[in-house]
Image (cartoon, rainbow, N blue to C red; front, side):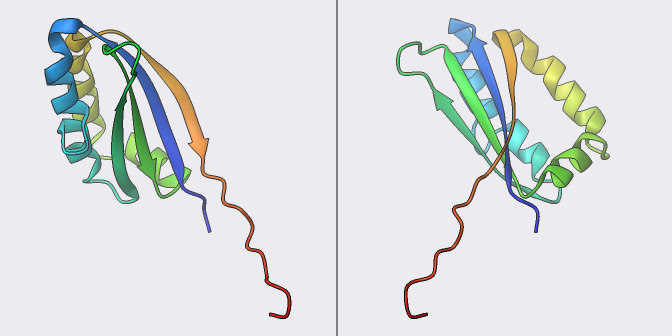
Length: 113
């Protein structure tokens, strides 16, 4: 069985755009709505830096790397690119931190089982 993954992005948001950014990138925002059209999408988390209120990270949860890769080449590709261009005006910078695989602890057996 494939391991779940997390796709993580960091953003420095323009101060005047924070409210709109949180709306668009939150768990019920435009990105999540778009991703929900794809098999294997689980959810999106939006987190904010406690020391810099204009710094955010998104964590997109996918069932597997294959599901995420399928999204990248799927029918939503054009919509993804359009939304990405639309959102550029909200940020000073964005950085793709990577695709991280979930690590699950091995199941341990209790003595006598």
